[in-house]
Length: 380
Image (cartoon, rainbow, N blue to C red):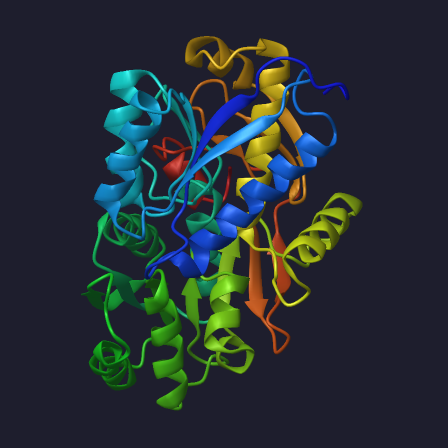
């Protein structure tokens, strides 16, 4: 990236909700994206050209993501879009970028079983989080699980995968409930009462957005104990822990490629710069980190391609590596997914996660769980 700015700016789209029930996490993805843009522009842009984000706030409405994606590509002449948290929002954008040949950069863990030539997936696939989490929970707490999720694509599909993993390992699912993605706090009370009655070993949560805060708060008010029956999740990050209260989140388990406490110089610099920009009380999290590093992957490919033409740019992206805060990552040329680290963390009283287990290197993505049998046998 050269220091002298020449030529017209690079225009890219940014679609994250900064309002509505998903803003608790999507706003942090917006922060991660903007931090990367600001850093790259301060260093001279890409090939001397400034990066200009065209930003829309879909307000946590899945249909609005599709609407704004179409506006970006048709009215704003933008072909590369960074955005989406929920699978519903990704599914709304997907036909737009496929029909108009755009490129969506998706920085969120998801249910897998998808691969599009018009998407770069930088969040975890099931083999990069669910497999390790299932093994850890059954070894540490027991084999009786209770599922609670928000009622949309990701929770139901993620629970389908987790159910198969549990069954394969000799466990059972003793209860399963889904609540509206806009569920109110009082809606979680009957669920927690059922959990108290069934006494599972582990609660596996695929609740997202404000509902995450309500679930953990209701759990705490019911007097349940994470030392013997924790809530385990793939989606509960430092952002949700901050919103619910550090004391409420303490003791619960999350599997993620990244936590703020990951050691290393790259992460220390990232955390320092993030807090300097957005405040000392604002923690990084896995969604911030993937939003941040995926933009650097993009900038690296753009420098080589020197064009935003999707076909040319994507060919440069595939196989690209980057020293991300979580560790070295790489975009898989076959699937468009990313090699990511696998970590298990337990929330502490400071609102951070103590890392209990982690992979020795980045885990290759297997979005269709082709290696499922080998993985459950522990041979992968």
